[in-house]
Length: 241
Image (cartoon, rainbow, N blue to C red; front, side, top):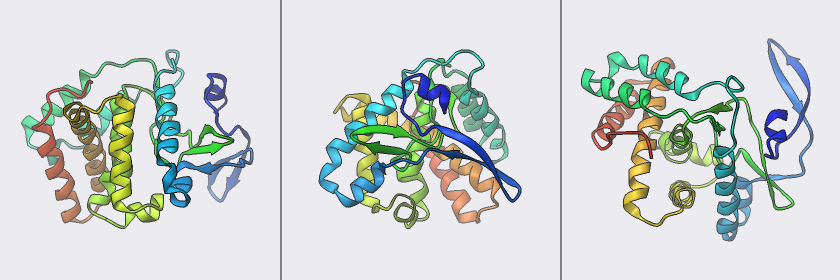
């Protein structure tokens, strides 16, 4: 967190480590702030204002340079995830997924790893980034894949998850994802937006399928995300944008 703060991104500064049972946690400064999600729940008319804060911060994160070895490589992590899926995908699709992942460039810029409207706080009009345990370096598509899951992917099977997680309804969550992607890409071109969205879906469904496998989810859920991943793999030839 301190490294991120020094690089010009506002975050809650931790000052202690505590043990609770067998687990450890960090104690951070108290924030007089509200999350973007909470602001939107109370003031839906502030969508444009919140969207600007949210996407501007994401762009800033993705343009923040990170020195070699300073943070883990998200690409290396993702390659290992794909290894876990080999027996769940047709061999040609699995090979295509692995090849596309290995061919992603590995810029030394920051990604948050769990970027969504609960993890962006606003205090006096300024954004504050929280939950920093997933910080890494990597291509932005690896970020957008997890963000897609937060607003869309998880809710495809459990339609109540959005309400309980972000406190907004399904329609609002899907709209927020599309609008934030358009603003992040700085375009209204639906072809461009859909192309990047499909690449994000590859990452998102890959992660969800692996998560279901590791958690021994029911067959219906596993098959849903496996089918979705196979379908979207047919629509892309690269994960780079």
